[in-house]
Structure formats: structure tokens, C-alpha cells
Length: 117
Figure 1: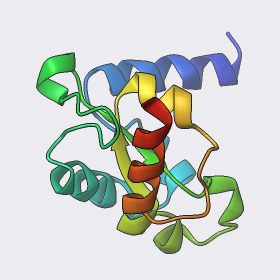
Figure 2: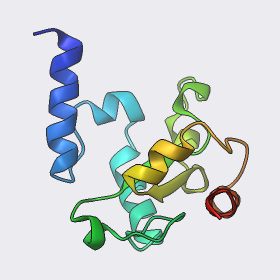
Figure 3: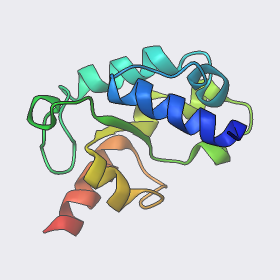
């Protein structure tokens, strides 16, 4: 089994359990777990676009980087700043990935909700 496939399987298993994978720290920075938790708490474990809650889904929501991680070359604290993070359900995460990348979490949520209407 290739290393990439193995990492994908491990990430998926951990994510399904609502946990960070062992690879999260190297890929998202040392403060990722803390910032992810803060984002979910700030957003009351509810998708900021459609309003679906983690309880409705039966699983944890995704935490989306508004400005993509690839644009933060070696600066995880800025990348994982709460204003760059937003809680999204899987459907909204897929719909709004790489869109509205130039705004705050509040502006992202507003623009995404307008797009759904």
C-alpha cells in the first residue's frame, strides 16, 4: 500500500471518530488542534452557512481555512487564526472550498449564505 493511500486511510478513520490524525500537526501546524477546537466552540458546533449542527450530522463538522493553507508558507499561527477558520458541514465544505478566499469568517459566512439563496 502506498504511503499516500495509507495516510488517507488513517486521516479518514481519525476524522470519522472526530479526532485529529497523527499527521495533523505536521500538515496544519502545532496550534491546529487548539484552534480547531476554538473554532468549533465559537460556531457552537454548527455549520456557519446552512446551520446544520454536529448533532444533526452525528459527527464533527469540518473546520475550513478561508484563505487556503497553501498561501501560508511556514506560518501556521496566521494560517490557523480564528478569523481564517469557519465551521462547515461536509456539503458546504465541498461547495465552498477555494471560494471567497479574501475575507473574514463573518464575511465568508454571509457571502456563502447569499450564494445558497
